[in-house]
Length: 243
Image 1: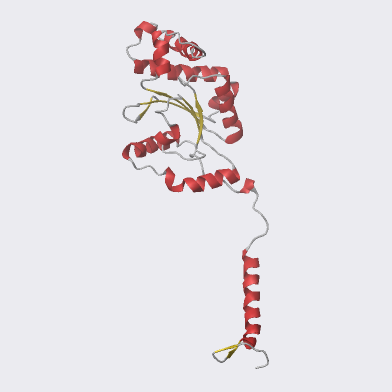
Image 2 (image 1 turned 180 degrees about the vertical axis):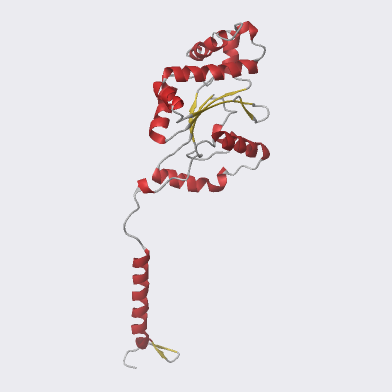
């Protein structure tokens, strides 16, 4: 058969023109479908974050999902990782919270990668570091809400309430929290419970944060940021907003 390969009487040489034509169509189709021009990152909007004016509503709803076991964040966690890694972060809510391991901020509000901009330190007290961090969040990242979040049974607040003098560097949070309690009407002796002390500290730290930062204070005055205060109950998992 002059070197022509046959299979069950079929001449494959006769199929070569059709195969070439099919391959050409496939290559052409792929080239037309693919856009060789990359989309600029600035024109792609990250879907992360909470809409402005909806922070209290969304955080409340997220905490309810956390309490009911109906959390949603892990269903699209990988997508969030890829989006924020490619396009960048666009957090909406800055949170000043305690370092207590019982207060995992993203989890208790059922928020995912890219939603919250969190500073955590024992006793959730303000500092130049915290102020600078939130200034960056507001000015560069689009943070539109600040939440100062305390929690029940806070060891740092309890130590300040008791006037403790711990060793090492730990007195730093006593010095940051004790003035809040001393400024309370009637002084420290008028504070009726540890939870009340936590609430007093939350309000004080917000006041001091705004007093420290002209940028944050101006943003609040201009209506560019909303302020929230809250206390997380480590025994129930519920967040109670004070305002």
